Amino acid sequence: MANLPQVPTLNIPEVKFSSSSGGRNMPVIGMGTAAHPFDETVLKDAVLEAIKAGYRHFDTASLYKSEKPLGEAMAEAIEAGLIKSRDELFVTSKLWCTDAHHDLVLPALKNSLRMLQLEYLDLYLIHWPLSAKPGKIGFPVPKDEQLPMDFNSVWAAMEDCRRLGLTKSIGVSNFSCKKLENMFSFATIPPSVNQVEISPLWQQQKLRELCKSKGVVLTAYSLLGSKGTRLGTNEVMDNETLKEIAKAHNKTVAQVCLRWAFEQGLTFVVKSFNKERMRENLQIFDWKLTSDDHKQINEIKQHRLMPIPEMVSPFGPFKSLEELWDGEI
Image (cartoon, rainbow, N blue to C red; front, side):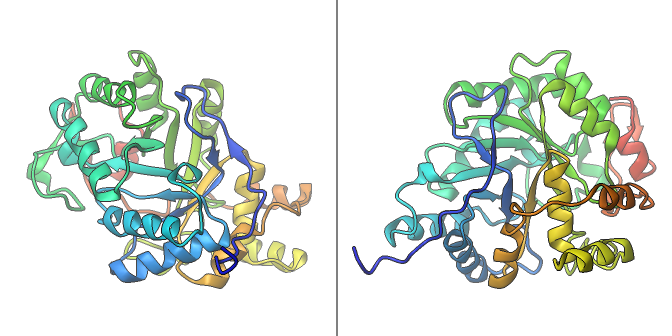
């Protein structure tokens, strides 16, 4: 026992879901596992390093192809004594568009659990408000394979997954205000989480206010702009306002962004496979931004950073990213 690796005990804040079913609370910061190009060995090593650093929330999806190596890494972490049991971890996965059909939701979740070597998820999300012809998982979804989602039946199947205990909580991702309001009109179990793009350059104030009023936890992805990835941008990390604030606090731009999100009441998923940056991203809970910092960040010009491919609605194809986000449902 004396030779077991020492894992730091970090005081990472957690949030409790208003519609959870007895699962553990979600750490406000999680490690993302979407990578391009993707390498299973690199991901496994990164997850083990993240657990050593103190991460306990891991975000995956069938689309990312990271469920299998993540499951292997978690099993190795338990065997090595880095954690005592799976219950110390919070694991999120997502339903891809090709499985967003009532009869395919449960089989898709069971497949994710098999890949992850788990008996249950902590959180299962509808990845996009879009269905597609069943078949090969890929992104973007070809136009001729896109289908409008039957939100009522898909969500009913998600609720069944939670009732069966295969996931402790259920939620959505990339849902706009109108789509969320539509969900609340029929959901028996309301979504616990909405995971969307948020950053100091795309602050989503209206959506944040709605989620707060409905008790939905908002999780930010691409908070740092996903620099260096296929769909990423340098705009966040290169923003002069954020650089000046970081310099004043002797922090990195990434730390400023994460601290800003935390002070806004958000949870967030970040991805770095670099050991030092992993640890830096956790060092955001023992200092604060000033009111002037917040004022400067609020004045940053707003625009969405992540491109979204053309998708369809029940009313026909969307012509633009804004139309997808602000459509009728």
